[in-house]
Length: 253
Ligand SMILES: [Zn+2]
Image 1 (cartoon, rainbow, N blue to C red):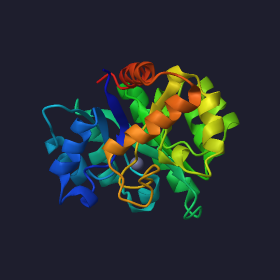
Image 2 (image 1 turned 180 degrees about the horizontal axis):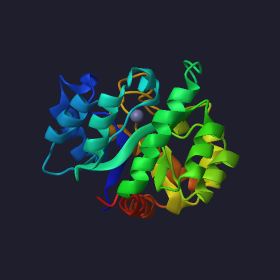
Image 3 (image 1 turned 120 degrees about the horizontal axis):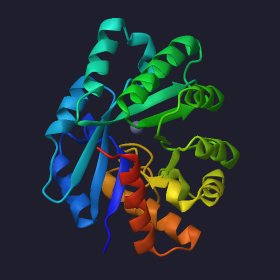
């Protein structure tokens, strides 16, 4: 039997500090035996390095979150940049643009984002992209600086997904595809070739049905995976095999 995987989780978040061992056990019990731990802060990244379980293979990424762009000065940027070079840092992310809460700092967000994409290009590392209400600008920046990567927790439409596929990107689907009102999310999974799909929890947020409303955790990725396999009419085993292939061809470190 193939394993499941979570291509984007935040188990280094304080939401898991009390019962992390149990959360890791749930992963092992549900065959979620690969996961990418995302860090937006240096302390979280250092903590992520200490997370381990004998049955689970973890990878780690680090990146300056777009919502933090205003707080970043040159000293902090350089600290991130030097950590990007570490072998433990398998990917640069999540990075991107988020105009949902504020678009007053678009220029600063774009600058921090582009500089990190350029570093990824120099270091030959993939990027993990967060884009919210900012898809056009996100696309322009990625188009101008070719890198490998994934559109995480993809929430835009199928037409935009195709444009990112043309840039060589993977599209990662999170819990909302399982929710009752999912429509755009279902169109997206049908528009993306299965060899370019990934799945994720983005936990502790966005728990899939039937866990919606609860704290999300990596073992819940199974609900999302099963839903997509069923929707696409492919067997779970072959879907899992494909997900593993995609994960490793994107995240080679
Ligand atoms: Zn995230």
